[in-house]
Length: 186
Image 1 (spheres, rainbow, N blue to C red):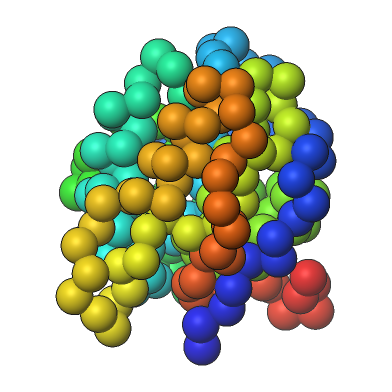
Image 2: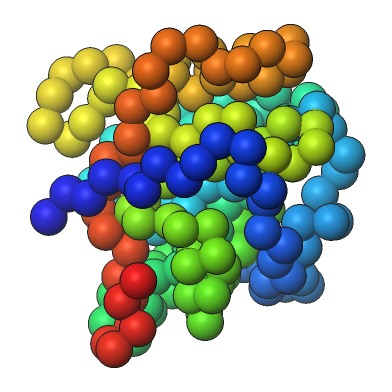
């Protein structure tokens, strides 16, 4: 069942995190290079909504490298959704061209702190790490033929980098609901 993002209030501060990376080591929010913008994306490997845009996300992150610090986080319950385990996330990162850290939120505490609801779920922060955009990547969905362009997110990034508010209505992201561990649903 498709779920939309919660649309966290703009201006909300980015919650801190310190999580293991699929490549070993740990990454925290404070480890991310100081850039004019930070993009936190909640992802999964198995979700068709993520699969539909994953290569476009890899390209977008590459296009903005050095200006936007991007990080992916997988918070799904891997016991009940083994396609989202570290081995599969590594395959996904290679397939999609993710050149950014991909982290594992095994406790699901970070997803709750960000109020993430679905995969994909995008949170763009300005230089002060205040929420400037939360919403969709673009209009592409598994059920349509819309091209994967990242147009909505690119417009938000460009405005944020220029120090302007994101123009227009911010449309929620749509995707697979985060797979919460039994008894811990957000």
